[in-house]
Length: 314
Image (cartoon, rainbow, N blue to C red; front, top):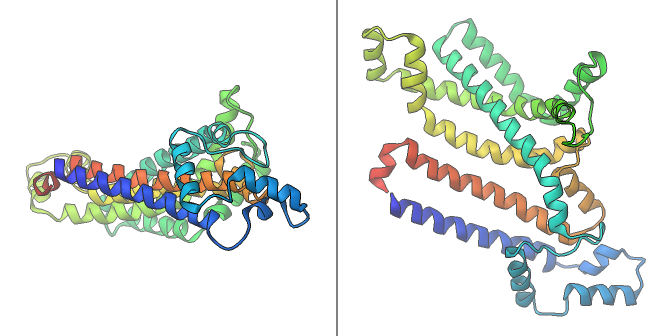
């Protein structure tokens, strides 16, 4: 087990290093003048030269890379040229909202998908199973941004139960939570459909095993068999999808936050690109990539905890 975790940790750190190299290369080495990109073609040569000096563009690429990585390790991602404040300050200000959407969407996805998937497996080839498969097929086919607009039309425009967008801030927790209901529902709509189908398939595979038939023959209640024997042994593929989906939810907030006009990292990315704010874009792309890789690393660690076979192989 120790060797398994060591290998995963080394691979995790190597992936993080690769991410920083790729992001820095895309932003700084590809053809084009970063100063011209930031200031625009109408900027004077004196202004361009001053910005080049400020960004250290005359230094060798290797020196600039290690300077950026060293500063990033201390939490310093430079200054935003559009907002004239620290990039780290902007990220920390917007991060709680994005993580609230991602974690809220993940919790709703897991709860809904497990209930639908286990219920479909328990009623295999019956009306409940067909209903879950039909709904999950619709969920997979409908993009999240389209689902978001449909939810706004139904619950905000026609029924007027929830706000159509915006975020009032955490000073009013009730209003803040109400403003997040529709975005979380839009994120959950697609992801729950995928996870429900995976849960159903994994549960059906486990339900065909001998020990499940033995438990039935011994007269155990069906609910106990499903939730205490079938689900724990079907967790490996489910955890795999959950890990991938959390990463998808984090990056999916980029679209959802713009649909609902939420001041999170997703909207900040669009604003940074529109403003040609390269330090901010560089920091946000790196952050999203690090979140995805970190989640995948945690999934590998969870594998060892839920699958005893990996402990003996590690």
